[in-house]
Length: 407
Image (cartoon, rainbow, N blue to C red):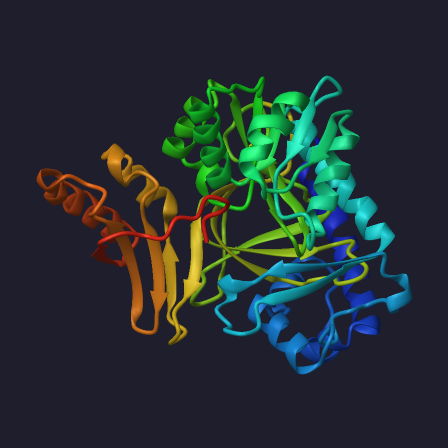
């Protein structure tokens, strides 16, 4: 974690050359996509085409089950999982098939252990993992990664929440919880209603932009009686990509395992540190389903300045999402701005959604939840939020409630 920058880049160059060479000989998808092209160092990476989630979904739909992306014999696959890919915008084909070898799982678990250690997990901690574990590769990685820190993790899923709040969680008394921000807030509210408390010291939150937004972090810390919030950035397709250290100023990547690029989502030009754009990742050691220049759909800025914690790996600041309407128009949604502006009116905080339609994107806020004399103030506040991320405001009577995860 403390390699000098030139040492990291030298490692990445050699690992990238090996990975591309291996993929060209084993992945039908990339053999066709790259058309014989290869790279010898990091400077050649930009010449490789980008890969999108839509591409992978379409490939798997047209050539079941793997779409030519499986780079090892099926007999070498140790774990198969599925990822909800609704955000890709393809109706009827929303389940991405994923595969990992035993080597992939060891590598991902090792990276996850580094992430959770960085975020504060240790042998004295019991950790409740609350998530949809049945179809998930990532939750296997979380479980192994937490165990690797010496913590004692256990999985409950997110069903039967009231039963877990009344019985399972109080009896196990976890000091750490790993879940989505939306569910963490819902669970805190439920525990308060039940008159129950848990000795939770840390919240490891993933899957939503919220944990890195000041107002969201503050709300969650208050809801959990001062528990420390740590942002874990992870994807089903890759495992853990970054995590916060004790400085809480961006999420450290793992540049020995991934190459991180930031691109302009429209022109696809590679941007530099401090510039806002879409995060693109390349996995350097993945065996079963390696991904080259994979578009994450997340809006980030990077920081390669030294961190007081001593780690030299690049830091990510996750600030929103990059989405596409039905007409393929790129919409850059800075959720951090929206959250911070709506937080000015406590009755609006968390009560919004951004909807993508054929003719554009809309920020919806519910007016039924507000007193009539506050609706004008709410609309003006929401209008500022909408303009901050260049979407249109659409007041609605009420919104659907998602207690488990914002979608």
